[in-house]
Image (tube, rainbow, N blue to C red; front, side):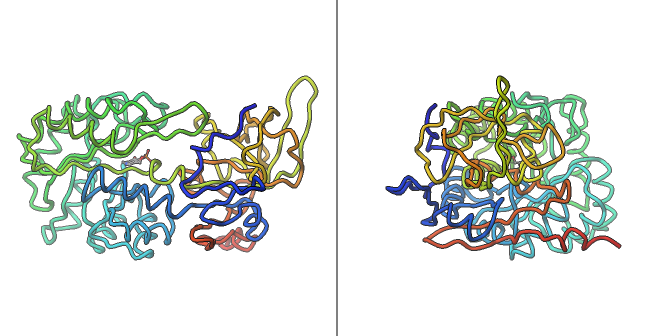
Length: 423
Ligand SMILES: Cc1ncc(COP(=O)(O)O)c(C=O)c1O
């Protein structure tokens, strides 16, 4: 029955005396009218605040993980805020460069980087490459031919549980990522990289998973990789991303500062020299809460004794997380943000799948009606970036709001876009 927990809304969210929600000084119901739905709306100031928090907590070298959300405007915002940028494919690298992101602050990731992706990164002069496999080392050595020596970190799989969903847990021995510590691969890779004339080994990277609430898991990861630092004379440790964020009422997460403090303390306890640069790559915790998705309600079906279905004009194509991980979200009406929500309903999309669920157990105001703008908060991460064209549904537009203005940063796809790749 309770109203929407307002801590799930972005920093500049404000409720007018008419009960309507504005973000960045822009009324969201009006914005939906103007730009159409579904629409991803990002609070620009909120993103900037998170970037500043990350820099204050970790210092120089902390990177934004662009897989959470990337477009040219986002790349230039992150550039201006002074963070580095983690890209994990040639596509993310291309968008980052197109957005004017300086290559020397880009970190290239990927468990299966192609020769072409590596060549592009070398040509651009990316700041770091996180090496993930022996095949990649061979590819890199072939490409550089001893001419350039890119700075590399070895991605190590520390065998540490992150206590999160198995699909986003990456630090265990059974993982497609990195070099296993327990198998001996990590030491073998580090020995090879240290003696290679084609690369300059600078450090170790560990990423234990995503949506992690227990920051002591990071301390454990630091503990297990610490002994490698003296042995290989390494100067950088990146603990990856993964800091969890609250999505629904009742959830709370450690802050960026808590996370950095626990990791830095663990580094000290493990005896890492203070000269080692300790960084991270948050994605979700930078943009999740900054984003809200606006949909239009198209039909409401009451199934007596079963449930109410509220169908909106998007769905699993703009937010696949509920289908992939069973993730929970809140839903509310921006026209009456603080209204009580006594009406249980399942918010579903427009796709041809019964599993096309956005909010399995939503609570909505009693008067929700066809034509309403319905919003899901905390959808700034892994929504647009995981969006698809399933059922040939065009991908939504993305707007940044701030200072009383909205600017379109990614336009809505059209039906022409849907056939532009057809031969
Ligand atoms: C290597 C690496 N770094 C950073 C991240 C970002 O994680 P998050 O968005 O949970 O902070 C990921 C996410 O999968 C990742 O694989």
